[in-house]
Length: 402
Image 1 (cartoon, rainbow, N blue to C red):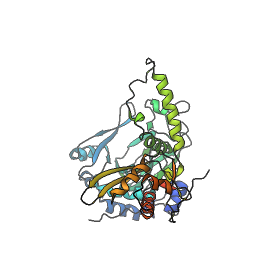
Image 2: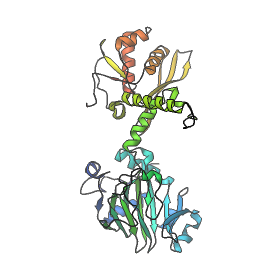
Image 3: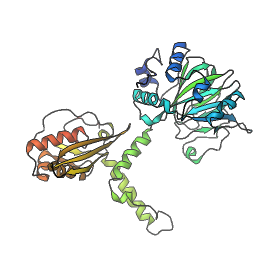
């Protein structure tokens, strides 16, 4: 069964999707006024015309969203069968982890070029008088007002810019936020906040970390697309972790890193030096991986063993002298795994390449010496295959800028 698309192409008019990605996403807020046709289209596509429709979605997590006695806000999970009673009593409902929206989350992620697991579609059903106090999130937010009206106030975050964690006023500031927070924690939204009234079909984009608070003066249903895209820190730490994991030394338990251990300082010093060395082996081309250019392999062609790629053997069929191998590539958006059938004669060459240190270079002639059973044509065919699966890259191909 084909799932209808929610179609982001016209959401950000007059900018268009491409300009939104290039000029707005991750950089600054953006507001589009009410367009009834978008609200109606999304309500039909998502099949959520009423609160009852949402409560009937099997597997969705339902939360009661309410204010505590001290003014702080909280959410508590409730059974979907009790949701209507809470809603009729004036409680705002929050729906997330909705299995029926999984295809739409993949559509959003693929359209915006982010990892699929980092996009989530949630729905708020606010009752009249519902408020959410000033807070910031670690995710970008795209809100589409489906029914009713909701007022948003948003402001740049100078207290903890580009936060790695969410935080709300009146809450205790966690140590993770203190690492980069500046000054006293505010008790309310900054005075330079901008107000937006979202009516049916309005769209508001709020970048990660921006302050925001909301108020509903009538019943309101809004779709919230949360984009918890990896940060630059996440991308580089993941790349470094993948490189370090190749060394058994780094996979050993760290029970002895305490000040009372006489060997702890020496161990920490070794770890720091190894960390620096591993970082120096990484190349921008290991992270971006531009498509390799197709051109002939010569005897003098030089190759580099890439980072963030692993090789393994799944099965060997002695009757046909073939083997099934796996080459996994670890990237920003996802891990890709290629399952390949090849002659067993190729396996020793692949293992030789896989055992090379990241950044090590070799020539076509080096490969022939390491795998003397391969003919020239077989070695060239194998290198083309390893280029396509990113285990190696050709030095005379694309280079990262200095």
